Image (tube, rainbow, N blue to C red):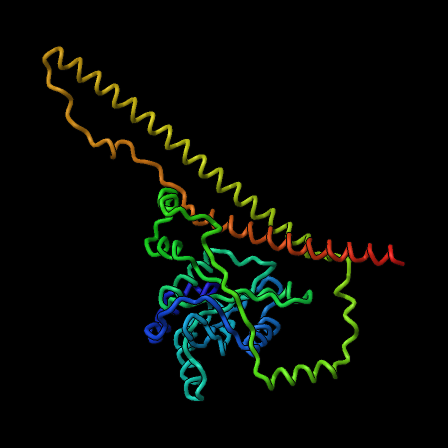
Length: 341
């Protein structure tokens, strides 16, 4: 997975046995409520602050709908745990689930996020490994901070076909990305999620809600923005600085390339003039030389990281927009209540 030694090849090996059963693209995701609770519990038990937790999603594909019926977490381990075999662990879990007649087919993976900071090269590589082995694979992004504010934040993403082709070719040069006409808005596609519970679980939830002794939820109308907005803007500024550094690198590459092209043009002009003079004197022309070896073009900086940074900036902006719109709604509501009184 992403934060576990980039084990994309390991996940591909585990999923190879199930890749032949999934054929259709995914247009909708149906996830069991129990799976959502397992993901939340996993973060509460092992996630602390910005630490990311990850796990495997299991289920099946029905026509164009992906049904996620179960999941299991990746255990926390360090680089020093040389005896831990991640592939063997996944195979053992899938074998155990199959023995108790539970859906055991890989359909993706999940990951927690810290203030929406999930658009990274690690996530891109992991999702490409999954989606390349199983076309319908998705990644669920769980935001515990936004969920703690009163609304469940769980989103599903897939790589777009354009980005899949770029990753297969592994050509992230500016020319290749320009030819593919791909931008940060064409990298990930969000898939709608439907959370489904059985009728018995719905009845139980209604019964528990009636018996709940939780105090009135006045905190939902709290006008303070706490530190959520401040932290989001700080992360946004950090990413903008990263973007500025990448722009400087690309501008430096463009200047060096332009300078080299001028030097090459001047060299060819001098060589042409010298050959003309030698021909007028009846002398043989200069021998041919390999221009490409004399003027090696500078190495272009990879542009995929820049696209990822732009995608993360866009994600931060959307989070800030959503948060501020909710707070503005509360302020207008409070103003109306004060005017009424």
